[in-house]
Length: 486
Image (cartoon, rainbow, N blue to C red):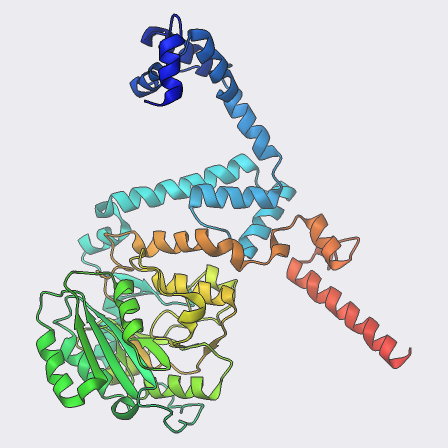
């Protein structure tokens, strides 16, 4: 007991009883108090009058509906841009992109939607998603399975969906035209160290894939003299270590195998591998994916040639048959169409999604992968790198095969990690991804540009991006005229 409470207990006359406290809380707060609240106030040894005075300072108001009125007044003071941020963060659990923020704010100003309607729309969407997440047996994915159909996946960078049955049908047909053969854009430079590239692999229940995986990585054109494979075994129960040891006997210290004493997450395993890595460049290679024989060479040669680039990535080819080889995957040719990495694009997708390569020293600037995530730790890392000023470069040819596994962490119908975690990433970092000007009210944005009125084209106000372009061209003309003396 604190000294203040001891003194009050000794000198307070007629302290409030539990019945007194219950009555006072009900009168002041307009509701029945919980037993724990009564107990807390009872321990303070205060008179009924003293309790009333204290509650009067912290209570919102006693009149019915007044709390809601005060909350509405607070929301009414927010600008349309700030209101959109508030709704997205509070209900959707993420930060809005620049486009969503500005478009929705304009809809509010024009009356196309009102604030209550916006709240309801977000709430309904959130309720639907929560219902589907809590009742996976009622989800569309489960309904398709019950009808004898197959799971489907979104082809990244496109609005297209593909069913696994359709991929398998194309693979069996054997009539899919082959993709045109192209060559690496950059020549391979002389080796700079014993290990140029460290390949990171997190291992858990990979017995089905381990033999094919080890053969695929060690068959890379530059593996024998430039690479190392670091396998972090998260206490897998399937005995993959025996296969790895066979390859280790062939390739020596170019294969590093470490078995953890307990099961750990994929990003904890990657972080451990980063600590062991000797290479100047790092890449991750998932156990169930495949790489073309020159994949590591193409990525490493790009980083060698482009000293200003921190991360290289390319499109990936999808496959749905765990027995497929890379020739079949390339012949079927279902490829992503990933956009360039920009701050706006990172709100929509994760372009360095599968098998990128990055400079090891990027971790000195950005830190390690966030181990609190189950499936979005790499997305979080790329966004932090982009905010820090990292440069991303997309290669022009896919050399990585991505296996669509319906039971994977990010694709399984029984987990919400693939949907909820990216939102958490945007909630944490979204405000730093978009420019300050994108969050300003129109009047402040015009002042920033030095304009008195919003530019209009074809009778309509232009977007903020177009307004900046118009202003920059006007300034360029002014400077050109001044320079030419006209």
